[in-house]
Image (tube, rainbow, N blue to C red; front, side, top):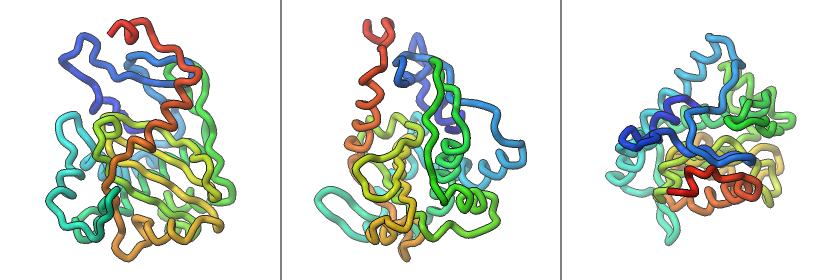
Length: 241
């Protein structure tokens, strides 16, 4: 995750301003981040310019949530009781840069085991036969692979707005799917020919309207959090809050 996202959830006025980090081993307040040296400067710059700079303009920044503000002032493309759907084209956002960012984070989670803040290594994400096509797309040598679809969701619940999590496999879905949360913006990445046609129809890049969904995302946050808390030991300082 970009270092700026850690900065956005710091609380400068608090005695310990650092964010709460949850891993399978420990839950505690810390300045440590999931980080390793992996890419050359040129690739880091490419990832930054084609994805990270754009998404950091729109996610929760500690004071405002610009993307949610943009949707609040826009007319939905369609509505239901549980969510609203907007056209990314109509609201003036470059949804492909959001998709590029999501794939860049997922690809990094697939090609390297990252050092976690309290010890241990990250789980490697299996992208199957799409790992190389995604790499070529990220390098700008090809278009987004045909068998990739990304659902872009803007969250309205405070828990999702104020937190993020690294890529995780989504269970109980026939296709290979991964979830990723970034300070109020949730991504669901579907991979493979066996994905449902509905996933392709709502892709934020491949749908004609470049769709963006607005909804409560607590259900997407609870699962990954609950899995971690099965084994995570909460620090004494947090227990005493």
